[in-house]
Amino acid sequence: MAEHQSNLPLNAPFSAESSSPPDLREEIARMWSLPIGERVEVVLRDGQVDSLTGVLELAAAPDFPWNPRQPLTLRLAGFMFSSREIERWTRI
Image (cartoon, rainbow, N blue to C red; front, side, top):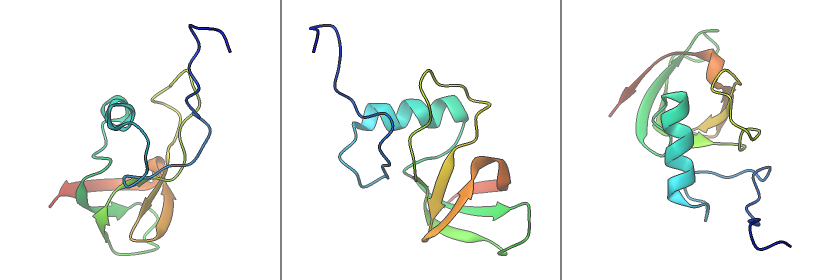
């Protein structure tokens, strides 16, 4: 591996509890304007569930280079969904 390359597995799934660098998770959260890694209540658009409460986790890392228009795969309380399905969220 060349000296200027990193061995960061951007395709690997990770969550708030993973060993991924916190700065990486925070940068993704900032780019998508989502409280990833924080305790929240989320209401989804499709009405499949009334609301979910827990720590919002990234279920899979987004493609790089990052495009905030790309939907993220998220997990909350064991339920997986897309960032596009979020109607609203509230930090708790």
